[in-house]
Image: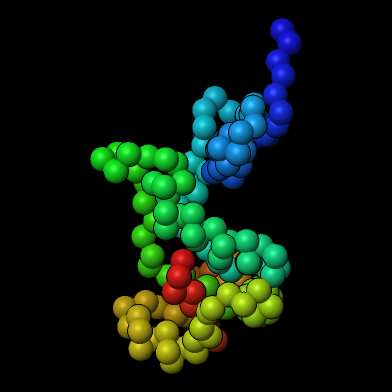
Length: 166
């Protein structure tokens, strides 16, 4: 069997399928291969379904922020008829809790460099906005045999990053 294409896309998850669609729209003959049985059967199908703009590097953060344009105009991107029911992007924001492992500091630096809007919230601000959430710091992980496993948490998270556009 001799199969030829202009573009070979490896992976048919959300990224691979999007790349294949964009390349096909640009006029290329595209072949997409995936080790799984169907489109989105890998990690895409097991995701939380969020679209986040925070990342530990500025390039990824900028790219994610730029992708919001496509997500907000999803039907147009797919050339879908207005009557078609499609997955849709619902803006609800993301709260990235500071787990004291350095990630929120890296993400904040990356978003600043990429000029992606975000807010830094203190524990007091989080508690005011979400009074029903327990912001105790659970961890570090311990064995079930360790007495500390059964103890109540005594420390609180120090803060969080909030990205309203995601």
